[in-house]
Length: 117
Image (tube, rainbow, N blue to C red; front, side, top):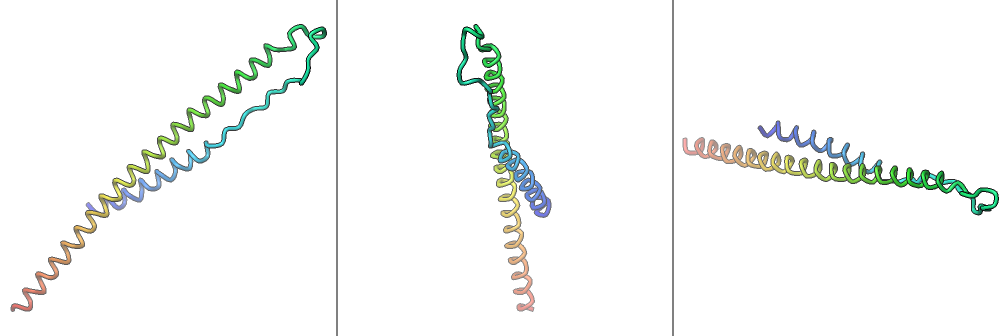
């Protein structure tokens, strides 16, 4: 049981590292450039391509919002994976410590019996 928990601990630590690396890789939000002229003469273009620029900006905002949501999900996955790993590793360490103490007590009892004989 202890060996299984310690192996599970290592496995969950690896999963947590992968989840947190995915979070770290998603931290940078890059905004697309929206190309728009500094000036527009309404005599030459009555709309100054405002609809095109608006669509471009809306697309950029939608992309950034989706990226932000993805980052939040990855950050949550990282926290959950780290928590799971911590829980399983502590459980394994506690059982390993109990086994060590139990083995030491048993060895001491055997040594005491030998001395009594």
